[in-house]
Length: 264
Image (cartoon, rainbow, N blue to C red; front, side):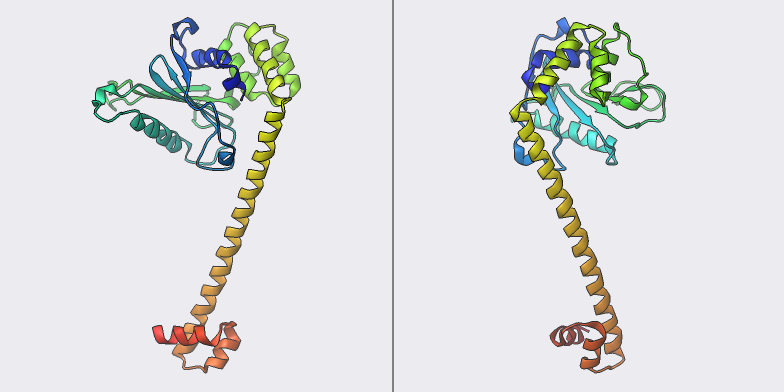
């Protein structure tokens, strides 16, 4: 909500994440300004921001917890965006450069650097295969504790890492204009009724997903117990035990035991 409602702030952020001058961004479009409420609880749908920046596709992902297989998930996002950009009748050369930027609140790589950038390279010569694929990863736990006023990238990432209002106010106290604008915009957004409604929907979606998971696990256990009863019944049938005895020992119905006997 913050970056969709204040696209100039998003443009400043993206310039820092891509490592390009802000003034070099001539065209900038947010492709998914609205996130349908019914998708808030869909585990396959991320609340990301898809953009077109100077003709290239940029997907900004923000991930709080490590749900596993994150590099593979990011490559899937890239493939989805890259392949869908080719219109009917266009040649492959028309495919745009597609970059996925991930800001993640967990360590992913075994290195000290908080920023990693990947492109497809030949394994021995390190020759670039194509510049149309790129992955930026920014690992928040690896950020240094202190950010200075001159390091805008670190200041932006510190905003994402901030857990408390005190941390936000400390950044705001540095009196860097764009940081103050971003924090003030954040306060405005979180005080709005629209934000509170989305929070309510998100909490409901979390509850619904947790309940669905609980029901699925309970059903799986029920099916496992039922299969165990059938396995016992099969053994008793092979021993020519009476149906009434099998039913008493397993809790299965007479009809179920007879059907099992026929299939055997």
